[in-house]
Length: 190
Image (cartoon, rainbow, N blue to C red):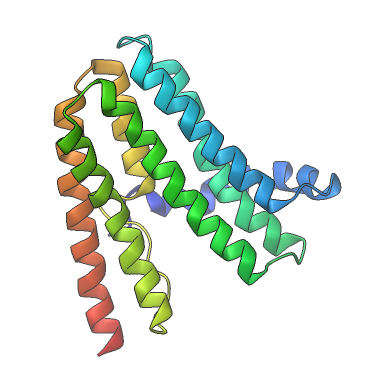
């Protein structure tokens, strides 16, 4: 079950021209990682301070850009032969930071405890995948509520104002995604 992650090859192909332009301009992959975090912060600000449904356009645009930068940073590094262990760490930290920053946009819309639970749950699928990779398993992505689905759910909250229900879905869906990845990892490492 890959969820919207199954669209990644299609999305990456659409960004190939952008990757080529960035490579020609010698843009650093780390710059793209930072840009993704900044887009997440902008989306969080729009979610926090603009009323629904006015928030949906900036949130959707900024989260689409955040996903684009998340796709481009690693691909650019591979295309230009600039993959490094340091870059891999920066990429992972940038992705986790962007996830948490986006969810911080809910702090003005929902109880702190619920935002914190959703934020913790949203990081679980990635931690499971990283732990599996550290144990020698292939990196597992996707699932019912992965990064792309969380971005879509945040856009739903921006459009509707349904902060609490969306946070509940993010928390429960992310926990389910982590459990599914753990099940896959158990089989892979057996």
